[in-house]
Image (cartoon, rainbow, N blue to C red):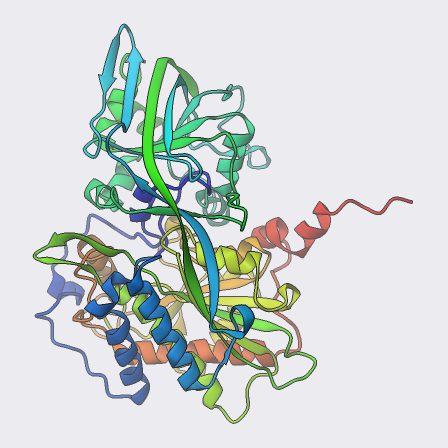
Length: 575
């Protein structure tokens, strides 16, 4: 599942791979049995439908040790991509990648951190405080640089949000030119859900910081953030390569020139950054909670250094197409996405070093495969065409979906909507689904109708503060102005013994981005089969509707990224 990326899109820092898109409650202490999420002792749930058995077979293949954790740019990922292409062909889809193949190449630059030379030091009050690499900080250079050392003044910018239209501007009155910026990695808590989601996506903040001349950044986790994403999870990414998109000439895509490096600090080291300033971390966190926090310049200077090796790599999206039956509408496409990549091989945990990624996201891919099979097996296809994509490099920053939206293999103007499935934690049975982001567009009614047709209810996102809508592949489509929904597992318990919310919390605490995300988890494949039927139903409704999905009138994302925003960006014709 998508990391919490901060801040410039072009900063390639493997440490950010640790931060989950759907973090819930990292402090959960519920027993595995009560949560319904233990393995291997928890009895395997029944799987008595043909659809569920197909989904299980696909998950077992994709989460097998032979795939070596499906890390981007590795032979294991390529084997998984070949498996999905073969399944698309078996289902009867048409290849819809580059040049009539199943695959769309994703060109990238990979950076691997070199520990020697990494440094974060505070020079203040006649002394130098050196933070310890790995224990107290992780740093990284931009995707285009391999050797960066910056000594510069520092400025704390609170959340780093420039939103005067909301009466909130963390950058007002601050001079960022040539400075290292210290900032919290979250949007202000008092923002409504839409605003918090947008500013949690980081792109707007990154652009604002770069435009004002910042040369580097340091992310400071709040205690609540650190509780959700423990430092050991972040630290475990230290030797993982991070990647950015590049054009054929090697130019970094979506870069923020001038921002040369970044770092993430352990919450236990925050006080050291503010030593001799009159501020402590506790003061800052309390002021943020009270809504009184303001930015300020720090005395002295900071030194931030990072070393990396770089190499050009490629990965692949796997794309299949189900042509629409209507000649006039078949050039329009509703796109299904589920990311295929995961974390590869890491440090052994209880003797197991392979991060199989069964829930994240072999299960999502398997559900999309079943939805494709169901739509193809119907008496007739939808009027519009359906596109099915196993997305690459999601864990690296939504790179596969961003590249597809940038250079689609079908006509760009014909992309009408997106349904994304990412890490449904189906380890406790439910009676519902959660369509994150559906309320922003006409897709809300579509999802409700499709769910009702399969005796399921629809629940609102139970954790809106986690802004999952901006933290998986659907957001690449949203930023392109295309209505999208993230279809997630349900939260309404099907029995009194197992709580789906607790099951999610248990998984995130114990197995998220860890080797125990394996196929021996007690996955409820009957729920997965129902999700596949609902997903297929959504495509059927969109495909046959007289009108495309549309943003709701006045919706923030529609106004920011949709047709109105695109029109506003085009200069008016001159008389």
